[in-house]
Amino acid sequence: MTTETQRAAAPGSPGTNARPKMRIEQATRTFGDGAVIAFENLDLTIGENESLCIVGPSGCGKTTLLRCLAGLIQPTVGRVLLDEQPVTQPSPQVVVVFQHFGLFPWKTVWENVTYGLKLRGVPRSEWEARVRPYLDLVGLTGFERMYPYQLSGGMQQRVGLARALAVEPAVLLMDEPFGALDAQTRELLQEELLRILEQHRKTMVFITHAIDEAILLGDRIAVMTARPGRIREIIDVGLPRPRQIEACRQAERFAQLHAYIWQQLRPEAAAAVR
Image (tube, rainbow, N blue to C red; front, side, top):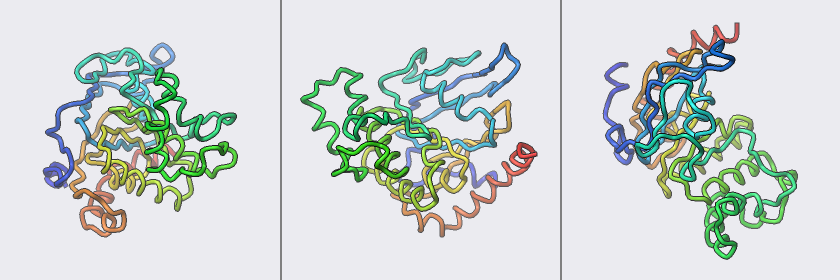
């Protein structure tokens, strides 16, 4: 599989030769005065407009890595760069979408989606023009006055996605955003995200435990080891864009990648369960 995993990127993908958008250099993150090492000696480059998916066994430091990329926490050792500038705090160019939606239950869909614009000082007169296209894009038109408790889990996640897109970030960091959803809703939102990325190319880092999701969404897949997390391998997906989920799943390349990545993860995943 070595030659397969190193093959050139497919047409329509930014590939590995894209200009770097973010980099993490020789980074280690510890907790509890060094008693727990989330990840260590980690080097990773994310290309401009690249969709990079990260998979690994539970507890390998994926979410901690994402928080470092977002500037929410700092590596204990090493550094994170955005456009070759050190990341020392959250950047307005970078938005995080979490697994558990992060919506304000007392705010309507409209108020939740416009909240990021309010924080950034965007004049209220511009909100309609900024937000309306993204509400349409994720299928929330007509739901603006509803509250989160009135929405399904999938609809709530659409609100979180619209809120992230409305501030027009350069980098979208996604921490298992579909992990809490049922299988059917998850697949529908995967289709939505594929469509959004085709219309509005962005740099995206997507954390997931699901190998098939990583293959469907990613230009490349970073496979992490068990804690302390390291990058075991980075794999070019090699499936052309635009992508259709069913066509991707029927491709021989999809089956090869799924089997290969699971072969890398299975021993450590089994050890984590034990």
